[in-house]
Length: 437
Image 1 (cartoon, rainbow, N blue to C red):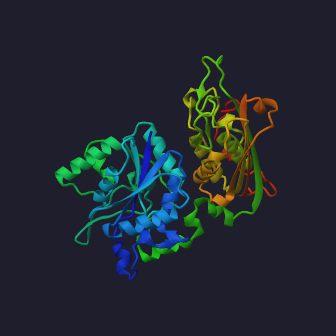
Image 2 (cartoon, rainbow, N blue to C red):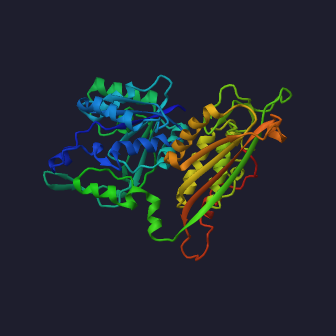
Image 3 (tube, rainbow, N blue to C red):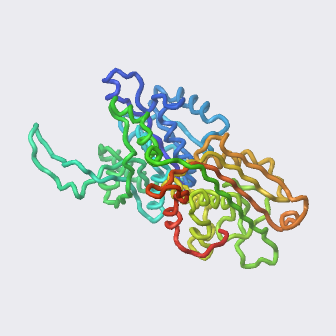
């Protein structure tokens, strides 16, 4: 699956304008950047999102393109992006975004920039459903209020709320059916409020995944208070006001040997480190893609929450993990650590290899790790060293990586002094045999 995300920021913000605010909601300054940048950073941290398309009003396109260039100085996002002008209606803006996607793209997430609180975990849930074959996927939360249908000020019907959900974004789609639905909507003059409705009118199934209560939309001036509300900003931050935070440290280690001519029938993978391909590097023997650095990092994250090791969660006996993208496995573990309340404060990584020479790739690896973890560059360090031609790595038989992660996590409520918070995260991973991925 080659997925991109479209960030819709072309709305006029009429409700905020009527309240006297001159700036449309998607351009409100938040933490030194426009609000749409928050959604962009979230999508960039999702391993399966290969790039972003921003859709802006025509009269702001060039100014926002320049601002994006400044914000992305040093490739802060870590993924390519494009900016295009939107249209009069939301579906026109989506169509403009679809037209800007690269030829190899086959799946897309469509997101409203006015929903800045959506998490990477929600994007992954939508992408999981797309990968399972759904043509369209929407996140939804159950409606808790009684809903009345009215006409001319009179109630005409009270629908059964047990089957009602409030739909959010990002919504995910296989690209071909979504484009065909947009073409038909244009030809037949349909007007809808979201892209899922287009698939519905074309008779295609739209699947639902659990949405997030904190994934609220900024619509009215009163909603702006959510930008300063810690609970709304980060769903897992609510625990921090209720529990004592303690420091934690996780350590990870992994090793893979280089493929040899006599390794017939053994999977040999092109070298990747930290999600970055290393051209000309020796192939490595591995069940997954063999990214030794991401494997060590994954183990270190699990160590912070008492979550076991990578082999328990992703055993090398699982045929479904053949040549699995290690960045996607890292995403799954990040979902567990966030559920456990972990706040990462620092990541220190070391690659040990006699060959290849890694200095030209070190900074790109560091930036990509920052992207995958959604961390500032000052919080991630990547080093590379040799073992002076000694031992396993020195004899050019393979490479190793070690990772240290420090963070803060809440003590589990009701168990004073217990620093093992996160056991639930480990339990969620299954009971497969341990071993390197």
